[in-house]
Picture 1 (cartoon, one colour):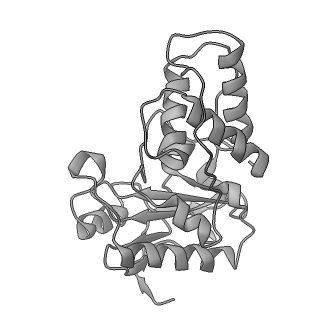
Picture 2 (cartoon, helix red, strand yellow):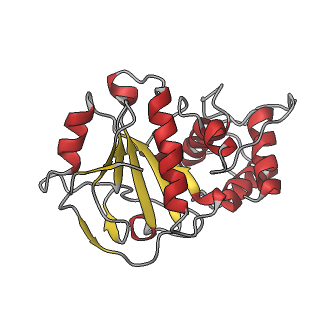
Length: 239
């Protein structure tokens, strides 16, 4: 893979070898604007790589160093996500500036880059996640237009599809055993959602994050039958 070296000063020492891969979108109007920010020492943010819409891949921080991309985050019992993850920023204006589909050249480059990274580090499929997955109350990226299915078909990440699944939807304000079981399932998959039996705002945020990744046709924070069926299928698959 041809990398364009664009070193960022925003990094420090790792606390563990990389075992999580976090995908982001840049959420800025242009790629050059995002690249400048990722290299600005005053911004105190960075990622290991940035992938432009035309497929160019910029290398910002060495994989052996900790980049500052995840912020306050959690996945499968780990809270210091920056410390043991690799972050990839994918150029896209995001929901604030005109969210749009990711171009073919860009996705092909992301798939190649992910495969390249996994050739060096032990990163399980269930630990290839989006920024929204590790910070559901704060983040939406890379969002419901990112082709997670295609990435999984290339051998990277988890993906499931289910038949039409009936069942009454569960939403914010509801309580009971069904909510407790739903929260337990999300916790087992990797989200930070201790079961309480109460469908609160945090639960709705996790449902939306899950839908952006695994139920992209409908992102509303309501756990309908299809959302619950896909969660169960993922847990059976190895989540």
